[in-house]
Length: 249
View: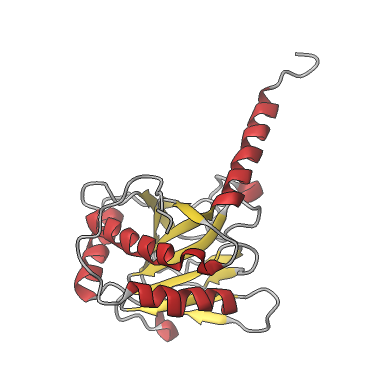
């Protein structure tokens, strides 16, 4: 099985989650991704460990570590709160005070590794850091978008939710997925200790509906090795072309 290489080393798994990860990966995650394009799991860590993650995320928020989320594409680096209203921080999980976040990443890593070659032609060996996100509860959301519209290598989006006593009828904040080629719409409530996985590319446009209570989530992206390598080559060629002197320089 492949070894997931994070952008920065994460904390080793020191506590066993309350579920059989291999069974979840092979009997639930892989077949649901292939059949439907998404799936979610509840009670993935258990309340005690989930509480530790929530405490660390809240501390990051209270300490001012979360900054306005930026837009990709032609609006890269621009904050447009009417389009995207979350505040974020990128966390490796190895930082002091973020050990529980590292634990979540270890569990998700194991699930993805256990899916192995059951995800078709894709091969995952690298992932991003974790994006810790907070919607502050003022009606902010994130308009319909695709995580990877340009072939940047992102294959699987994994979101771990941290919201206790969440009532979507009151608090909103539902993640709505619009699976490509289907009339079916999937609404996923951001419930505490829930892990959502879905394909990151154009197969799954999605939106975060307005949130009217503080909404926390942790997102990590897993890269397909072949597409990621091609994306890096394109970026390198683009960077080199921009450095070439113009005829009149």
